[in-house]
Image (cartoon, rainbow, N blue to C red; front, side, top):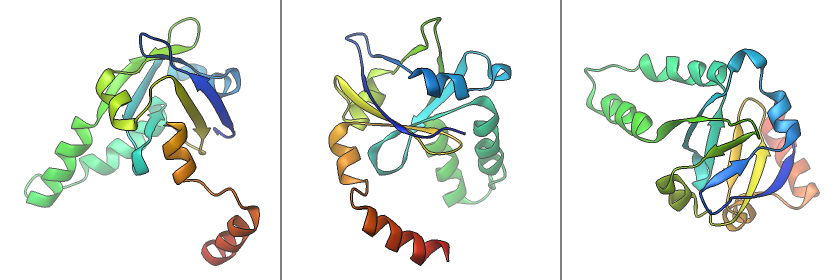
Length: 144
């Protein structure tokens, strides 16, 4: 499980180093291959092989005969790429992904259970809950 928030830097080549705790949570059986895709609300989503296969199974179950489901499949496969961790725990974020997420030098990495979100600080601030009372109220509303 991935959790916690980390403030990180993207180097001039577009590489991002995963924090040690995030890297340690990636199963050894995963190897160095991860999948990066456009996430929700303007972030990037990073998946291990196992978690991505769960999502892929859902996408592959969509009908090739239905025009809306074909569009979903196209959009899904267009919005992803394989990335590889180097020995230092870094991976290259392709330029179109950085641009889409609005990430320049600073990035926020957020572990959200089964995957990792990568945010620009501005988009993260606009899509997060700072007030713990608000969070408690929303949790009461949606988890009860």
